[in-house]
Length: 253
Image (cartoon, rainbow, N blue to C red):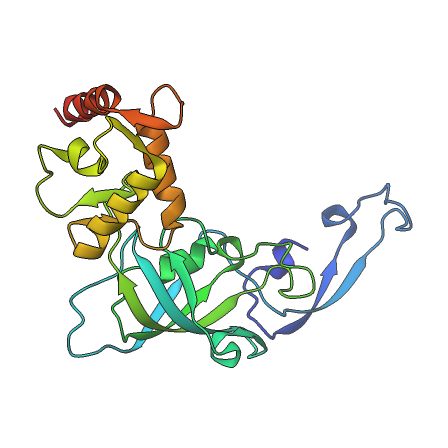
């Protein structure tokens, strides 16, 4: 049977006759008698090679297509998802809202993540994803059949540049040498989460700082505060802040 399938194409119908020594031999198996000649009538519906990658066809690029998407960027895009035979699976256009992800964060199947890279705002492309880079042999119950080749027609509508890998907040300007004093607005020598959050959001609003796009901003700020609160008592002292700052400078070196 393995030899009989060599060289087939999608849609082909053929009959394969398998002699006993290339089938189940003199012993047979189960309901198949020994020394049986087997006849298979097959219809090739689809096939793929596990070494295949995605296929990208760009249909339109705007005149200025210099800023390209990369890992960590926050993307908003529309798509139609269908099977190779044209069966529509899903459409954000029909839903009336974009699909939003942080590229490279595992929020979509690997083939889709690959297909959205190096794309500029306004670009339209078709991405064909083989099963092993999509939903695999299992598919998605009731939604995507097993071993499905997926076809995505995509339009990228918005791109927000991400931060360097590993960062959830960065400064766009020089950091004030009196940073702790600026955060500690009441001057009591302790910074609570509320003070810290208010200060960080003010820096982001003024353009002096930037939070990683596409993530929960409050959760990022809370994690930043917890990282500074070395003893976990719910407040950051000048000494804790100083030690953390020294560690950061050491890491940079």
